[in-house]
Length: 156
Image 1 (cartoon, rainbow, N blue to C red):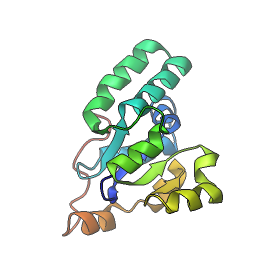
Image 2: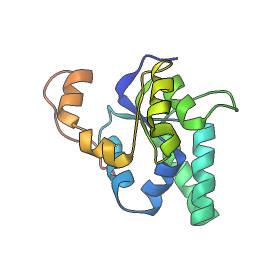
Image 3: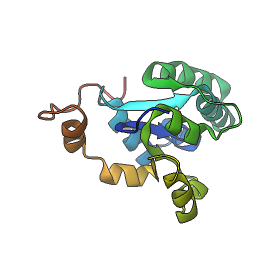
């Protein structure tokens, strides 16, 4: 396991699909990641496989394949055993401090207590992440110095 970093984010398959297929908080959350080169999206192949399958099912396989090619360049790749929950394992293996998911079973108090004893990760909805994301203070904490503003176009 890598030490947790507040600048490392994992998005569950449902959030990755929502980012592509629907405007809203999932897109806003991942735009915050894409707009800053020092904020990293962590994902295993298993997690991307799940998201690609959801996108193919909800939209079409060609769109899912094109999305996969693009996301490969953005993500920090981690590996984990095949039986692990892809998002949780990506967070654990990649040292992510934030896990974005719509899955209530990952966000309830029981899950929080169980996760808290094993890894230092906060599971929240994309709405929750957008509400708490403060690029300037995060930059100061992880990079040091004055926040220069976004350094990438989140749509490219």
